[in-house]
Image (tube, rainbow, N blue to C red; front, side, top):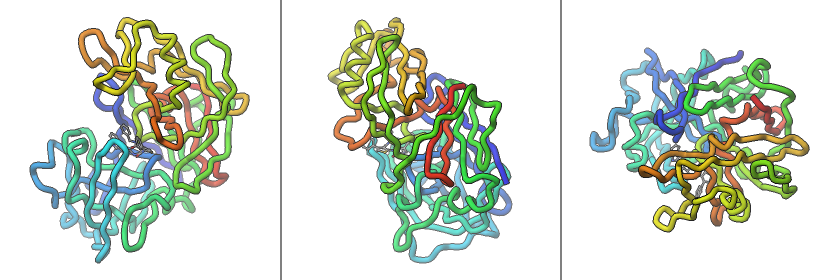
Length: 328
Ligand SMILES: O=C(CNCCc1c[nH]c2ccccc12)Nc1scc(-c2ccccc2)c1C(=O)NCc1ccccc1
């Protein structure tokens, strides 16, 4: 089987996150979830959450579904690097994405979420597309929806085609040859830590010469920005007049009037180009904008987040433990 769903960015002014529709239970309850290659829990806002933590999100109601079955004694709790977190209990439920169903998916029901999620009306939860080793359910960890449907897919892949300020697609079981230009360049991934972790071959700022250097990164649709080693970030903003490492934000900002250079990453001999306009993450005041490229700090790897993803078609190939990039 193959399936395709729209990936819609929110909020409209800048692409903080991308959500896609997921059908839960019988009769179907459709929720918009963040598809996240950087984590491996499928969790949703539910009717067992305090009203104070809900602000317009659609809620999953297990008792409204004839196919939900409590996974007794199982709980989950997850914390992300931005400090956001959620936790709750687990049911087995029918979960359908783009027409592809799995009848007894571990569906993690939130009974509490942090403010970052409560105050985000666009998303009713997350669908993890990382490797199942990252799943937080105890006492027995659970498999992701993608892991569960893998044997039924026409090909053991999913393709991510995000767009700037416009709906893109997540495709399961196929690669849409009309969605990209040229060839897909593949590179092996190391999934031992549960991430889609790759080694890029270097970078280039604008039209400056390409700098060969190994960049150890994860491909993460759940992280908004492109987070890189300090030296690379410094080299990038050195070409942006008026940019600064803003003391109060602890992040690079620049004058919104600045013309941003493109950022190119290498995969072997392949060069992936992120247009300068994609590197502006959003306005923080009348004249100042927030950079889409930021320092990875003391993280042991870089994060190729949405800022990079939306400039490429990315093929997550679980069958051959590799990831592919192509221009659009
Ligand atoms: O967790 C994920 C993927 N799920 C994100 C779900 C999510 C959590 N709030 C969200 C808000 C919107 C959409 C999705 C999410 N990726 C990874 S790997 C390493 C780090 C990390 C560790 C330490 C320090 C920094 C990063 C993160 C991280 O925290 N990214 C989120 C983020 C988000 C914003 C800013 C920084 C990092």
